[in-house]
Length: 121
Image (cartoon, rainbow, N blue to C red):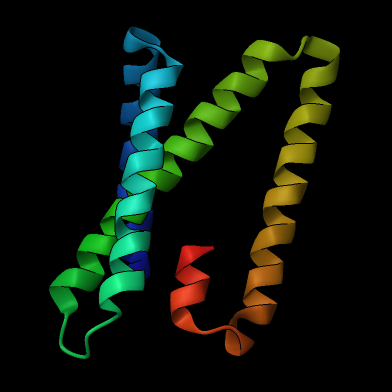
């Protein structure tokens, strides 16, 4: 349920931040994404994950879903704006490849890295 919560917030946030970034600009949304991303990472590093802290876990998952929505929406918009048409496909492919590579790497290293370090990365 935690991952589903994060994914649902991510999906809703992607649409909302895309519309909002068209109105107020990319930079304020990107800055807000950095702040929202740091909050759960710092909280998990400081507090840890309590055994009975379901509220914390779902709150952190929601915040990380918001941050992921910002990263993916703004990054895609910046790629589309900054690369001309023939190079746009290559830029998206490169971005997706590196995102997939880092996800796979952390999935493979996950059992060997403590939770507090994984969430900080």
